[in-house]
Image (tube, rainbow, N blue to C red; front, side, top):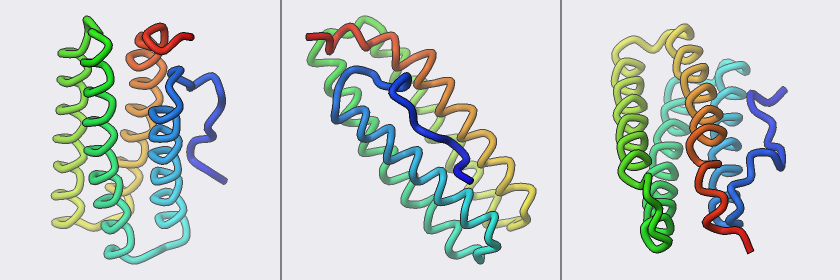
Length: 132
């Protein structure tokens, strides 16, 4: 069972950003499945690394589009993105030092909560920028 199921309610009104968010959800679900199925540390870390790379790509794209549209809360978005990136890197470092299942569950819960609250509370605020 997936950790997160994407629904149209999560749409921010821009097809590229919606696809990015769906891809991030897919990566979180892959991490969840790897953890649930007992995949080894290298597999889990590979997924976290892919998640970090894709997150960086998405943040650059999202921030660029928001800047182009003169989004007044861009600095808030950038700060939230930087905080998430640092938190994921911290989790990854701790996971390398102590690769136990509790830490995997911790990062999974953190990412699910952060992603869903960020999309639903922050990202949906810019939906009107992309309205037709």
